[in-house]
Image (cartoon, rainbow, N blue to C red; front, side):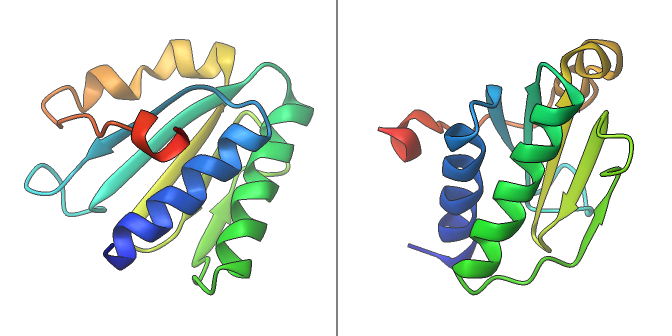
Length: 118
């Protein structure tokens, strides 16, 4: 398993542990230079968004990965977690519906995360 796959596994499982909704991962290779993968999920309240983001941060660090930057924790409406080659977007449901990142990056292929959660 590559480092990206290990980090993807850690981040997706951490989001799932805090009941993140509609977890999606997009393979951004060849689509964007921002990151190799995006993970997009949401919570139904600011408290849940913050809990999901903290869990991802903590689990990534525990697994030995560097968390380069986190933005949006204060408002907890759209938290961006920069893990280097993977960028995690944790939205409040209303904000996810509004920004529709999956549609914006619609040409990026989805990653089958069910294998990670299985």
